[in-house]
Figure 1 (cartoon, rainbow, N blue to C red):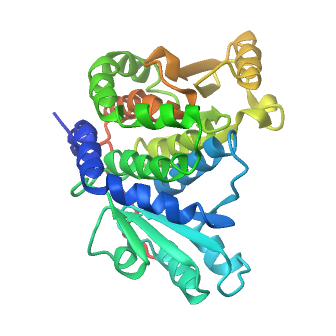
Figure 2 (figure 1 turned 135 degrees about the vertical axis):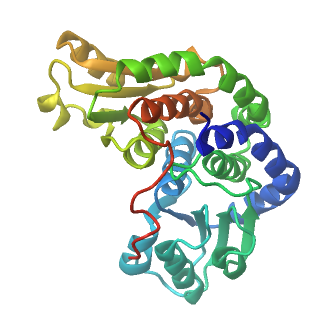
Length: 333
């Protein structure tokens, strides 16, 4: 039996190609606009805020650019602003109707800040009310954990931000970025079986700790919050690799499960893995280099595919419809 998530995963290359065709020039123009701001706020919730964490943490390794990531609620209720400050706001939402992200948009406009929405629905409130909008071409998405909308949002942020930085490395990153649709096509074919086997081996695990450092933390956040908890209905917690020695180090023991996300020879993550292995912790390692050789800053585009297959089959092994919901959308906050 195929579930809706399956087709949405397989649609990712097509959605990316359609978004590139429709929005490439627009994204490059927006990059020029946003490069002039003293500070840029990135706003989102769930999978959308995970893309914001990823781009912030990737950019800060190669640029002093001032980027602040907040949830819509935090920005709308707890962020001090001054009228007409030289700041830009980018808001991400699959539906374009996320209530607290929409509240953040309206607050930004009230203070005269330039606003951009990245959303999948052209007729949504956020697309209409923002100063500008990028529309990801994903058609309708049903699986709650977000596959094609995640990948196209992340792609859009990468083009905007890496186009601002003029260097030999960023030129190569952008060149590789536009090849990502074909890379994902390949990964969808080559990573399912290994991820399915991992899912079978871990189907009875109840709690997963998801660890990543640098730009891999954003993906660890998505994995825990929207993939394990929303998609597979498993308890999960995201952890910075650098914070392993606080809290989690006292919790790991034989048969505790930790998922490690890596993209390069990360000393802190390697130390955590070694420590866990010595205690017979159940270590699940996803290293982007095992799947495809690309710049480490592109790792989330690589690692997300085997992770999607892992969650997809983990859900099925536990008798769940991957991507279905019990409460989300039924309760309004």
